[in-house]
Image (cartoon, rainbow, N blue to C red; front, top):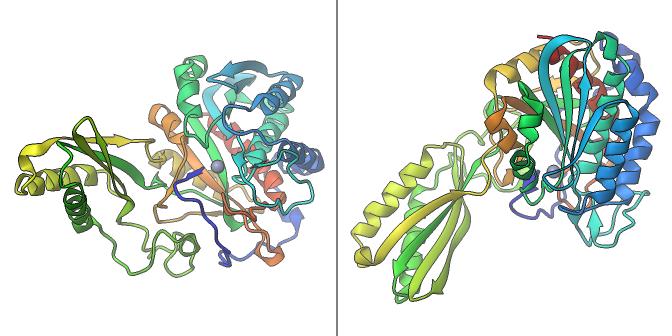
Length: 425
Ligand SMILES: [Zn+2]
């Protein structure tokens, strides 16, 4: 997960209540016992990744450990895909579909003190987006599934992606042939979230808002201030929310009354400015750049039509050269049918995990998992990592980011079951 703004907040929200049933409630998930058995091994693995964080493009040690682990499980392993990407193939013993589990591996730059006992050993770098947990869960799923290979159908690929934080890794792996290697039918992935540990959530369709950039170019570089103000004013006329609540504040995302988990959430329909107009003069030209976030993909066209119409009536009409729109990364968008089927399966699993949904579209976040979803139908889950009672808040990119490590066992047993089920059909 990449955040468009660095968050520095003290999250105090309380969401879905903790699940406090005894662990032996988990009964019909065939992977529950093994996920529990290997929990301490996986926690050690996670702490090793945490002590040795590697930022985007530098994931040499992490990728090597991943490749060695998968190799040890007997998977067919391909390395150095799109940089330090690793793909492992677990072949089932019966015919079935080809499904992919995606995990990201990169850490981030951070100078804030690490609150955990197994601190980052590399100054200025730390896992504060939970990718150490994601990598570990991916390996844990591969382990418990590989132990039941004789019963498995289809092919299950484990894709470990580098450079998510720079939003380059997924596309780099695709450019380097990852999709041709896998010929996948479905793709799944999960991100640690501030939800309470024991809760897993997924919603159909758009998960994060579309993030559009506009560049408006003019001949000449006079009247810079006036033109910038006019563009700001035009864009401001298109902004849309149905609330006074400050949607960009992360503490509002999970508010029980209007956050994304409430069906009446205020996060359903909005157009927010993510960046005020910035100007740049080059070669006797004026370039104004701005960006906005929206829950409606049609908004891009509406904004451009409005800009063109209003600029045409302005004193700067004959200086307008063009308006270029770009999208740094597409929005994570869950396949409706697969989301429905996955949730239905997990709800019936009889596992000690709460399978939730959410209703809103989150602003100021993105994940280049979206590039895989453009080619392969898939679902992106939020995996609860907070333990509010213990003050553990798994809000990515925050200085005190921590994860309740029981999320690893939960992730392994839940998604191992899901993948084995999805590969059967
Ligand atoms: Zn992330």
